[in-house]
Image (cartoon, rainbow, N blue to C red):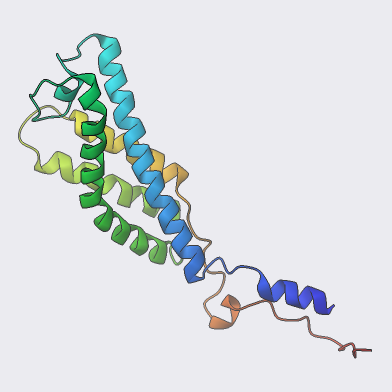
Length: 179
């Protein structure tokens, strides 16, 4: 019986700060990976359709330089790194807030979808006049769907009292004396 109590007391807390940190970092990597995969699928579709610009770098809006493929790979890697250095702090803040709220929300997956679609809606509302949806908006929308479906979310708190959140309590009954 004492082995069961020790095992129950050492099980990881799904609501602890370590488990929450792991979920936030996993979700951040998931968002980064989903966005890049969706972007690359869009680039591949453009190539297959035969509408590829003169150089692959011209797929990035605002870039009109011509480079050799040897320079293209490190340049693209540096572009993605710098882009995510600017995006990651805000993304982590949103994911921490989502982790906190998802523990208490009755429909955490629906809430996650709303938060995930916010960048797409903001992009479409603030872009200059043009077709709806734009290519960037489509990439953000597909990324939002992937994230909303695949996100790691915490389990909802079972009760409202703080006693329900602690370690497992021993069952009430006669205590067995140690030998």
